[in-house]
Length: 113
Image (tube, rainbow, N blue to C red; front, top):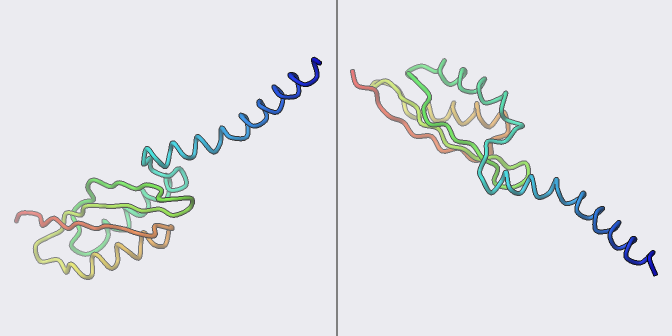
């Protein structure tokens, strides 16, 4: 008689413990937090983008997980008025694609002279 409730509670605890990691990952995705896997890589990407001809600054970066291991993001770049927008956007896409960003939105803002 006592074994049935004890086994039920033991199984419930096992299920709860196995689901905690799933709940944590789901909350991080729903809150659109920057993926932990990209924390160190993004700062290197920003530095490489700043080295492109015509880029003045990187502003308002936002990266999130769309689903497991699919990362998206957006970044606003302040560029010089004479900068080549195709060159900057294509190279920015290549830089971020190399670290696993599948979809990237690049906005160019032209700096005043």
